[in-house]
Image (cartoon, rainbow, N blue to C red; front, top):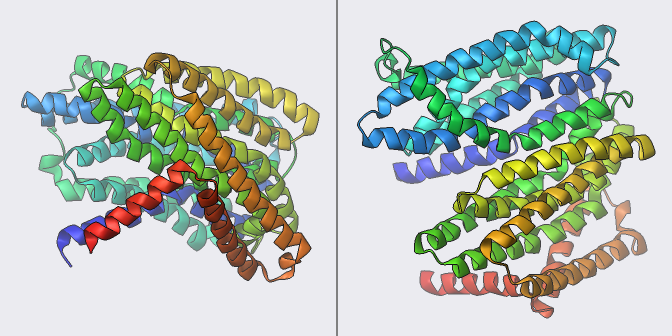
Length: 507
């Protein structure tokens, strides 16, 4: 097997693992600690520094790559890398120290319901994650640098190290350290990831150690980075707001809402990101050719393919939610009562999966047209809407209101961005999209009707949970695609046609 093929396989495996890293971490936590108050305290506390961590990790690449290429053309790429690394280290270090010192005050102010041991867990969790920020920013810069050098596998591998250490810390040290084993594992992973980069590049190629930091250049970079990072951090800010409200609703609410959210977001991680990524080159081609018709076609196809795959997946999850939660989480300290509560929350979260996946396609349109500031404006509106919906719904219907709020905010966010892009692009073919969505919805309803009949009419749910899920998933997929073929769903026909063309070309 060639080195290129091995590298490609490693890259795909590590990327797949990263997509589900939060899910795997939470499965380990659920098994070891269930939905106890210690998990509530951990999740609530880590959400604060985690917003900063994701802000650095996800925004840095989008900002650093074009900036590095610009300086590289001038023969100053390594000098620019040095400036950004040094500037980021000092900025991250200040945030880390201030965050760690202020953690006791933040926890007391943000989560007044945490007392005694719970408050202690929250404080030290926040402290450990804040201290990690000092190196998270530097790691993010170098992962962007590796991507600029087409070393995607190494960039992904360095992130995977952090995930493995987090999960490993929880599994290996939980008896000695309790819930602290999770943030400790993350901290160790962050340090180890940094050391691996240093050893891989060697100190001489790591940066220009003697070069003084050019703060004018650093600040110029951060003017570009901040709006990109803030746009990407909108989701994490909304999650933080959700945690603030859920922490006031009793033991187990924070943890079970988190478990539910991670589970239902699997389809978004698979289909949402994938379809949006596949559509991006078509949109970029349209931009280069200044062909707005091709641009509109790309958005329309992206939205249609997205709904084709997500509609049956979300509907199937709703029908099978309790069994899915049971298979994924119910073991060790995670009880049947936790399964029931998590399942209820998860159903109300499902709307967010659809709306945020649709928004992922729309966002590519804004980035292609270089109108990313519209996304930031919509994100600010979504944050305000989330706080309002949370305040109202949590008082009216309790914890499920927070999950419902996330879905409603997703609808608001996607509606604002879609209507804005509609105007910028000169309109889309709404009749075509509407007709396609109607056919897909009917096909999905047919699938659900059959599954519900098999579940309740034929009492298939009396089977053991794993065989039951396997049978229902296979049956659901078969019924849905048969219905899509009978109702002549265009996006489904296109996928089948492309598959046939590929088979002919391969033979």
